[in-house]
Length: 193
Image (cartoon, rainbow, N blue to C red; front, side, top):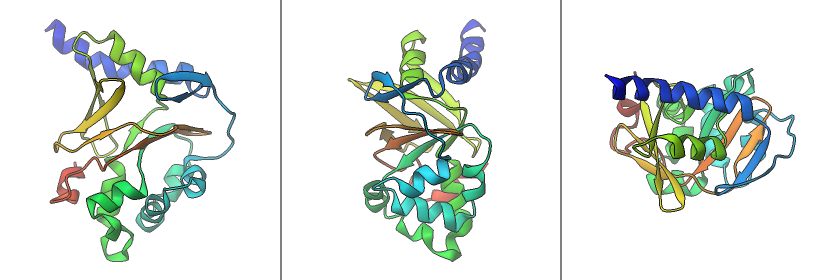
């Protein structure tokens, strides 16, 4: 019972920690540096970031730009163009796949503004060395250490590492990941509640 209660409270603790620290730090890897203030929303951050053209196209095609411009806060686990290319998911910018693109994006969005330092701190406090967070698609993501890197695994078995430099936006955090967090054989089924 105690273990169940700890697992249930861990995501809440991570969200509370994120609320306290959002915007205070910018990290590269696990190294904390002062954050550059940003007045850009997540939508504007994705649109202007180098290497995220496919993600920007999926956001626009899915009609979720207004969500990423909204109040939030959200953490967007942002697959790069290379991650989309490796997963063969570039077609999510096709208008006929609008719903699947929206489902894919919901599987990459976590409520709250989570910096890499917040995630690393939560991992350091957990006896099992893993922390779970629920996505906007109502699926669980499990964060854990992989050497010096932080790895995130979805319920579908897809796995990615947090890579590159995170961006703190006015309404959340963009966390670059090196792979899609849905299995490509059934992307919509893996992300719908």
